Length: 559
Image (cartoon, rainbow, N blue to C red):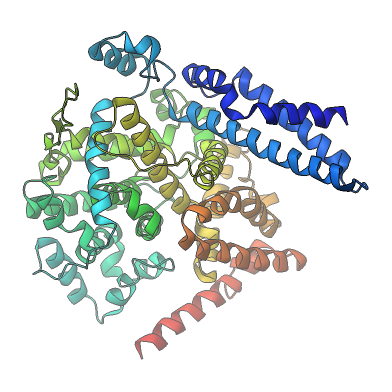
């Protein structure tokens, strides 16, 4: 039909025929679809309509050829849409092209415009370019450190000695695995008060990529022993802040679980090829602090009550802003835990010959602070939908072969894009770890479910006491009878849509999607049985039975 012919005409022009429109759209920037993108979407929809109209008809050879051409046209349009989307989401929207108008502007003026009127950070971008160079060297792998014990390792050894047996050690040995059990570690009184300290110190000891000598040899810190001592002291303070928060779910055990899952994802081939050892450390630090000081009530509660936190952070990512601010306040308040100031502010940069680049050193303090803030703020669940869209676009970008490795000699704009790309990957890893509970082994999944529901319902009780409308999922009366349905909704509409594109980037994450399928099957069975909260989590209920099985399995492993 004529509709199909018009679509074929669009395909005949090809994506390169629209280079001017593409460049203009890139310069427009912003987060909303441009007029060009909307037009492309409209044309692609018409192509789909034409393909649907041809479906099931006797087409003959000419008709079959037309259908194949329509499919190619749809693919070409989708590729152009993707390029526009990537350009829009990865640029700051002003002078993004080094040609045309920006070529007539001095380097200082361009940098001022970009640093003042966009969110681009050239200091952090230069630092990232240095770290990206290191990540290509590290991606070949490094053996675990076997050096003598430092103060950090002595701390772990002393903790092991304080236990009656080596159960803590056996749990920690799984810290690089998807099934690491933070709940089992929490059961040991000797470790309970220092969960993140113990786990963090253990990972730093066992992962050669994160050893103090590795960080020192690269010139990122000057004194490895002092840095590690300060970091351990920092984690001990963070553990103390979790203990005093009063939350039921967002406690130290949750932070430890997220840290271990972050570590597991950071060790994937995809992430190792694209991140440095400092990025890995930064991700673990962000995971450890991502919920520190959590009061057990969500952002909506603080907005409705106009709490002091809501007022301070203007109702925007209230708790996430508080968590990361509290982490840096903790660093500033005590010199003994100030690992941050030990990061190099003048890490050497190899300048490109003939470059007008003003930087010859990299400020790693600025880079790490920016990275931690971005990662923690990305755990705001209100941003989840956008995160899914961005991750899906990134997966498509990889499929199209559009995601390229960066290099330290690239232009300022290329370095900015490389920085934004890496930070998004790190944000994705932490957010994935934060919502991974339903994918974990059955006994862990059930205990995390019990805790999060208890915290939600405690908030709902408080809202009732204050005469407020109860927030979604926080009504104890209605929620206790619909637990399976609620968990299925969370898996189907939140977790699985995020992990599905993640698997295309990080194949190792398939272990999580397989866990989600298993958990989904479990909740479908419980839904059919109309299981209540008491049946699932009461004394002797299914959760207790699963936990008992897990303890027996651990005991059998010891034997």
